[in-house]
Image 1: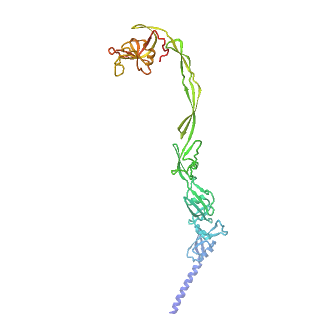
Image 2: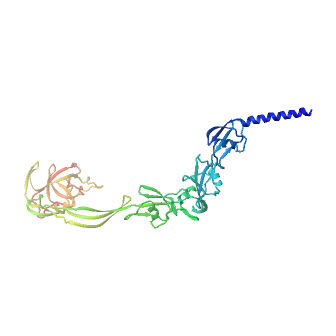
Image 3: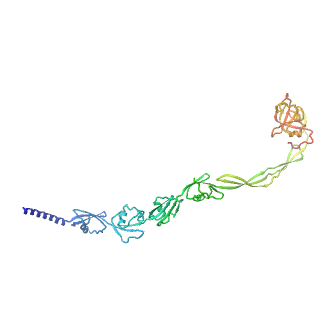
Length: 462
């Protein structure tokens, strides 16, 4: 019974030993994937390390090998090798003098392997560009990383201040990282291009909108100015000459931040005015009565005045005469009027008349109860009754010709015996009638003054 059991054990050992001899003596196919590139070899090695030795592939300690080098390999195994990248890290304090190798692709993990700790605000640069610590780098053989160490700064903005750490190189970059947008009108100290230094205080005053109204023109702008003049300067609007603003340049900006600009201009206008000619009449004994002739032609004078005209936003606001003078005086016209009485005769239906003056007139008629008043007047200014043969004239004519005998075609002989109101602008007579024989007149006619002429006859009719 014992011998049978021993024989069985011995047979199993022989079988296992045979299989081992076959396994270890077999020449197997091994596939090696190095950085994605496939290499096939034949090897009798039992481990991954032995297969790599047979392949002649050299690896570093930092390379990633799967399975591990000590792992036994089976039939037709696959070995994956990821070659470690050469890394060098620069910091503001120093550069690592020794390179190191890693198979990591995340910048944050690479720096951690290199012994560089990251703090809030620090920046990692690769090829000069800022990169995310948690985004993988491309598959390259060597990597140079730069770490910008954040430093403390203070920002005073919109009536509040806060401290932060930044690795930004300039003030502008620091504000941009904080989402603070600036404009050219803002007041910033230091300037955007100023280098950031430790414990720097950045003061930003945002410009506020304001409006400039100049006539029909409306301009909008931004300014941190406190006074009207400074705001206008920021907007590039200059007050020149007589221009002014509302409020004034030295005043503070009003609450509605509206500024009125009044553009003022003046011009001096020379105005010429003719001085009218005066007419001078002198007696000319060589001329017949009621005839005239120019003895000397007049010439108007010239008066010049200077006026200062003021315009505000293109509209005239005032006009003032500053000076006035006569460039030359007028020369009067001299007219000679006739004073020679020459009798004339005229054949009429009433017989031949002799007259010394014939004057065109406008004739109307009246009677005692048709005199234009509410009552009847039977008498005239000379005391004669109102009837055919008496006529009325204006008061000025009555003074010169009252009682004088005249002749009116179609009416007959008459005596100037009454006074009437006349018709403005016309030489007028009013023909007398009784109420029973009244004839209505309203027409132009001629008044003949019959001889003899009175000694004091007026040479010029009023």
